Image (cartoon, rainbow, N blue to C red; front, top):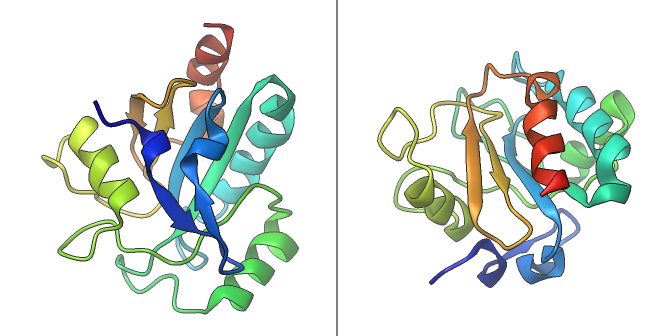
Length: 160
């Protein structure tokens, strides 16, 4: 059976990262964008990361330019926006596609495991996927769901 830990992705700095590096941790994967109405969610994601990292939570940000072209910049611009405007310290990855023929394998897998209301498509930036310590996807959250509203689910998963 396939798990999240079998995939790899490229960090924003261009380094390959095995998702197996996050085995044993609770992972929140988010497709992000720097010029979106939901971009202020970076602050809430960072807050969750800082609050629960010691207990095993990691947030992984995957920039995407497929929705309204709201992530037009390159890696340096994305890194600056995340760090300077929102203090992001959680891992960020290179820009990916989350829908269509060029969907990144991480998102292809997550959409198959947790299809959501659009039958496997991602509706917009800041769709969130919570993955258990064992690499199995647990829950999908809509873009409109702010990070603060998923804290109870994260806490429950950290306690299991």
